[in-house]
Amino acid sequence: MDWLPELSFIWAGLIAFAVLTYVVLDGFDLGLGILFPFARSNRDRDLMMNSVAPVWDGNETWLVLGGGGLFAVFPLAYAVVLPALYMPITVMLLALVFRGVAFEYRWRAKRWRGVWDFSFFGGSLLATFTQGIALGALVQGIEVENRAYAGGWWDWLTPFSLFTGAALVAGYALLGATWLVMKTEGPLQSHMRDLAKLAGIALLAAIAIVSAWMPFLDASYYSAWFTGWSIGYVVLVPALVAACGLMLFRGLLRGRERTPFIAALGLFVTGFIGLGIGFYPNIVPPSLTIVEAAAPDESLAFTLVGAAVLIPLILCYTAYAYWVFRGKIDPDAGYH
Image (cartoon, rainbow, N blue to C red; front, side, top):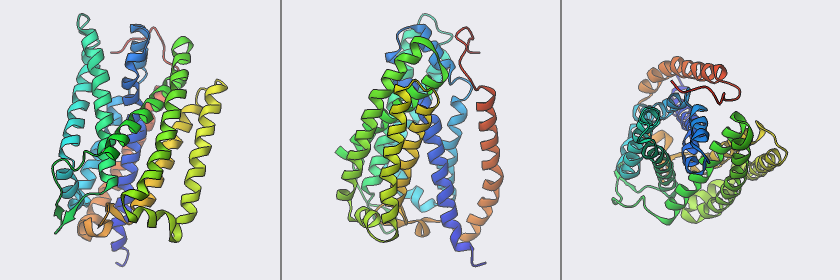
């Protein structure tokens, strides 16, 4: 069974796929919450929420799959990352819970609707910002000694992690705005098109700054990007980012509806690929590798059987939900 050692890399790919799927799916409905204060009327806010009402909670399935998968197949990585990022992860989960409560209550509590609108915005913004902080803290590296976290309580709080938090807010806002361009019509669509242009500029600038910053965080990123086999990919990724950026703004300026959202997704996918190249072969930078962090081969093989059944099922019901609720939002339809 010489193929068994490769299971750790298969599982690393599956975990990466689950995280990326969560980011692009839950990203646009978190972005919609970030854009809530910019809506011009209660009717617009109702339309914004109706656009994601059938799918928003299902999008978070991928977060559970990614976190649970990490615990099951990379227990050492889980044991290192959680103590290092207790604060941002805890705040993120609480914000997601509070946001979910606000989503439901704002439809029923007419007198307190303004409070729940603000709570929906605050939960979305805080969840996004802490996700970005956690990503930045992971990218800048986690100190590991004797197979355990060896850093301090506040190591996650740095200028770089705060910047990645703000960058992810801009990115999710772009996803939310382009989603609404695709799902709505009239003044709301036009307003979101304008906001998408601003968010797009902010995200492209953030991608450029993070790309220039990362090689100075740790020498391993410079080696991963600019030596060996990865040089070709490092040239390709910026070209794809530029192509997605051009596609985004051409779509927005020419009044396209689906193209901007597809381009925004492309920016996230290409950025994720660039991070993956920088991380490889580590799962926790700068020193904990995929092979070192993996569970025993027997456990990887056993859990892979379950994943082979579970992941296609999740993909199927997710695709079916989006297919059923495709098209524009009916302004006269209510949320039930």
